[in-house]
Length: 303
Ligand SMILES: [Fe+2]
Ligand SMILES: [Fe+2]
Image 1 (tube, rainbow, N blue to C red):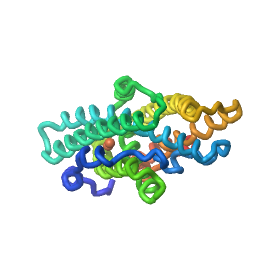
Image 2 (tube, rainbow, N blue to C red):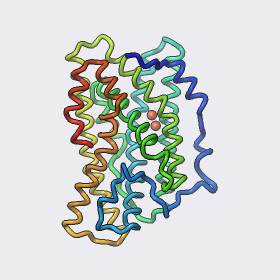
Image 3 (spheres, rainbow, N blue to C red):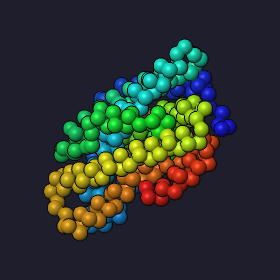
């Protein structure tokens, strides 16, 4: 595939933009709970017209907290996966090993950053919000899959971050500046990860025949199904947190509308935006056109 990505250039870009957690949290840098945290294209709270503006903002913030938690979760499987892959490259090309170790170090930093924000959210929001987990069990379940399936899931997640930031967050002036700063700094380092994932997928697929590649694609779909099950549970948690935070009891009809809109909003946020990303599809197509066709045949369910 002619993308021009190299380990050396990914490492150079990463070293040029490196930031520290201390630079983006603490002191006067606080969450502002009078503002939304998530862009409406991902939160989809406005179709819930039976909620007033304040209630929509509360739900938006609950979705923001879940976003922190779900990224914390997925990064917990990406970190050991990248470390294992880096170890297999020893002894090898210096840039290759260094770029992957830098990638892993950044994911460890992101996990810590997301934890920091979650703590601040809990203190400021005032209502306990349940989240799916625990992270180590989810990581174990995902890492039990075929490495190509795990690598495709990682590729999906990191291009998805690009799409969220560039298309929905960057130009949204209503969002809380501190939450937006978290998403921006995360995105800056994920740009390199998405390129490294492309190289990792290519290296794992090298030498596999079409049937073996399609097995990896099916495992990627299985992981997506596993994540989808988690999202259904998360919608129930969000509904419960919303009712407690607003002291409002929704009617059965309102709850049913809430579940339907929010499940699809979660599917679009975590599954659809990755499965339909042009770079993900281009990588799948470079493995075999069948891989792209298979994903395109199911992605409308998650949009
Ligand atoms: Fe990350
Ligand atoms: Fe990443």
